[in-house]
Length: 419
Image (cartoon, rainbow, N blue to C red):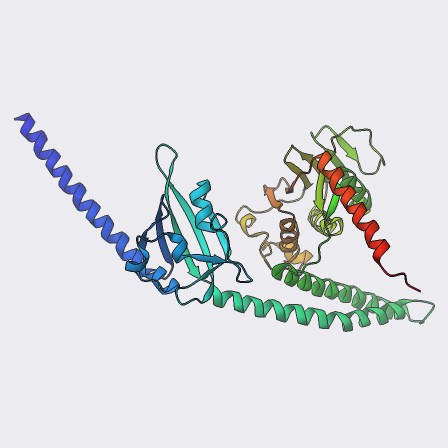
């Protein structure tokens, strides 16, 4: 009797399970057919097993044509110049090879009708219990129109910023002349007005410069001249140059090497701390923009305490940071902090002002050197902005420096002498 009851329950359970699976499959089918985004499922052999209507609309391949084909035949990735991207470098190929999720917002594919379109691709691996990659599922969408609109906006901003800088510079020059006692005689009230106008003009000039730099950073026109830099000496000198701004506000500033106990007082000149040599290949002027921006933000938002510039690293990475004892950043704002025009909505930021472009430009510059920038913060306990850059060994640094010296010598020899 008990056996039969068990059997009935088992049969009932199997029936419910089958019904549940059919229901879940129906739900999945409805969702996949309804969304505009393309969805593709690729097995571990690289063959397409699922191709939803969104994928059909974007690529021009029907589901019956695509399913069963190698993904490389359907998704032909090309770069911005229309040159073919190696399969192992394409988003799908990377996931199948490395087993790590990836997102590519700059991808381009050739449709069945040989039209190049911009797509945003998000790919995740399918991994079994043995940690083996059994396939990948990708979600993608056509972003061609968005990119065209963004390019037009960037071109407008770039052109407008460039054209407006000239009259703004002229206004700033005339205001400086008016404030020069050797050029003009004005009363104290007029001087106060002119000084305020001069400060506003300088702010406007910085805004146009930020707009122009951000536009160049987005379309790859940002000038960049990387060379081998010993980051420790570079940061120590930069800290010394920046300390006045912190001291002016009554803030302490130090340069921290390695562990927090190895702190160098920025006002004390040279240090006796023995530290390893951290080499990186960067444009020192561009990286100075990044550190200065982070430092200026730290000083602006910190009323009491100190601002620290720190350096550490390992065999692969050079890490430096700017740390403050300010009010901190709300957790919900941190994921958006490096987006263009994003500003934390608080009374402090509204009072201080800003363009919302500084951290976006910082991110773009750091990415030029295959680096990473991020922030860790807790409200009431300050913020720390970290930058990781690929570290170059001392031997490799010497080779690159020798090449730089040789190249500079050859340039000076071959360049025509100015008469």
